[in-house]
Length: 516
Image (cartoon, rainbow, N blue to C red; front, side, top):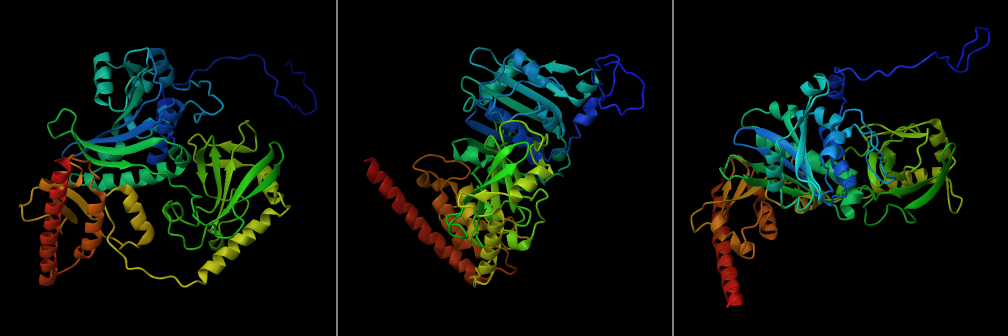
């Protein structure tokens, strides 16, 4: 608009022309420092898999004898052809997202990946196109946004490697040069992976819990490629289970959950579903998703994907007597200036219009939202006065035991602080031993000669024979972490072995009889 000098305030800035300024190649350095946490970055990539229609996703860590090599995310979504791959790897290109899509800004794949890895490779195929791939590196971005074309023979080999997931279509995202992997010292890979996978399992189970409850199959696996086998050997496998932050069996106060309607200027009516957890609940959705103080408050969802887990967003400060109070809010489908989501899909920023609307919220009977807060506080105070039975702390369960069982054990029994988890593995033992204890590494070794007897004649996976392993865990848990090994305990281990070997003979006889 033309500018006429004068004393009046200019409500619009006058301009005289325009020019297009493409991003400088140095933008790649900013792209690699977006502040993505590891779990948040992986979740962002899985959002892309869900948008592609995948119902099966595997997060795959590859390692060898001495180090962690790479991370892959494999899905059976609709895949991409060459043109789609070029679009996906173009920095700053924003595609059109459908109304129910989890993607928003078009930067997640690149920013999330390059925040943690020096190299991002995407290999994909559709039902109508052959496997193809692209590789993007921080150096390539600085070299004029160069993107490398993956050898089509390798692209096909990589797809074939995961033919149990990718049948007719799908995508593999590969991270190389992962900075956190490169800092792991020799001999520390197992410990690092154990902690990293536990955090990742919790994050994905929480933020994607609605998708997991609706049938999404999401696994985390570790493969050792140093075994000599062309595909390597699976050494750990976890099926991620939903961690529902509202998954209590009985509410902390009768009449809940209760729906409130908040009149929010600039948005309209926003529905708030208020929940009160039972006091002292040990369920994973309450205790195992982080600090109770941090997890009180609002849980915002966008298209069924959790994007903020707790916090009051300026309505009030977190308080110990409100730890039972949680409110589910589905963000409006229509974009607005009141509720905005950050690029990492981790936090929602609100304007005062939202908090003012919440303060005016009422339920269908005309009860104010403030009554919910009072009810949550009363439920907490009532629960605090109840006498709780204190259960003996145990050494936590570790690798080789099904994650569902480990979660229930954690819900029911307190853990000993600082103890290494008890792991289960199958190994070579004398025929007169059903199990042995490696107390130095907190491991129960089961005789692999008898493995098929507890897996219906099959070899089984890493977390096989769940009943047998669970019973052994309960039986042997207090045999670990002791100073001096007493003769009486060794005697128990010996006669437990004798009795269990008799049970194996009985099991084999029953199988033989059923087969004849």
